Length: 135
Image (cartoon, rainbow, N blue to C red; front, side, top):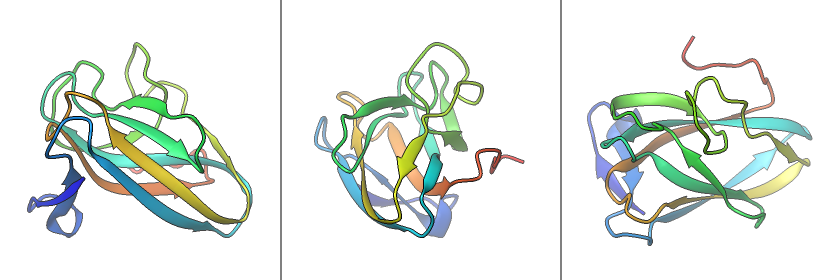
């Protein structure tokens, strides 16, 4: 993935892929407290099918995540990582990650055909399963 500019993004920067099936970002995190975590992402989807990423932690099988699920997100929106399925992404059960104390690797990969239309701005990784950055 590459870094792009947008005045509305956090720090006025976001990441997206400039070519099909080659967008990947690996983030290293340090978990202070072992537990169950949810991941929120601030995303933009420039077409109804966009906002598609696969997410993997510590080399586990990738899980598909579709932020917009049939709706264009023409402004930045917070979406909780949840498995791609029918329905409103804010109402689907989150994908929960059991993380041990220590270092972990999170990989976001742009899904084929979603280059530049799927934009990722910011992440929040929380063990407060009731947390919602939209409130």
